[in-house]
Length: 154
Image (cartoon, rainbow, N blue to C red; front, side, top):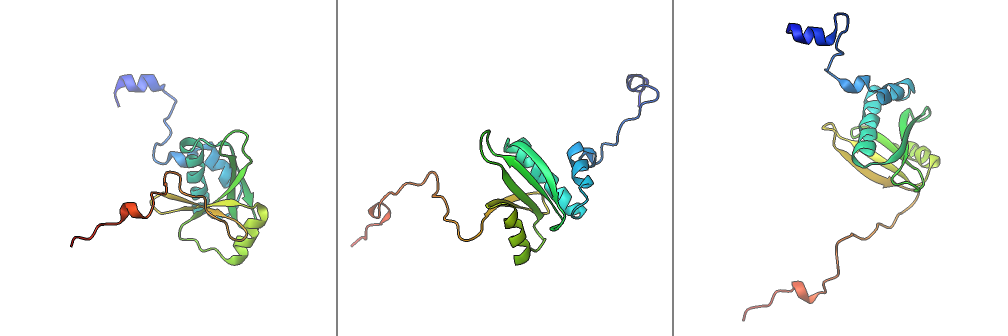
């Protein structure tokens, strides 16, 4: 370190370690203070929190613990004025029992399950009690049966 860098820092100030900034993030510390789940589940919840707030621009995202399920749940609004949605972030390798799914759905129906893979990729699935008819695809139009039929060469 040069003398200029030392003087800019100050004599008694130390730089925080740059290794893992997530462990020092206030929201991560808040989730750890809930004392539910293991560190892997809290880490997944924090990754989903970052995705919801920074990438998907959700509003009013908060975290709360579920001691009976030993998980951190996230609640937020996709857009202003929308009803709040609950998100259950879980590591992709964690198994869910029917009893666990029933307890999750008793909290709020429907709810989003977010599976977090080991490479930090996220997959969201909507959970509901019973069968849910999917929405039709957005950009697909009916083009008729004859349009894609090939003509036979004689």
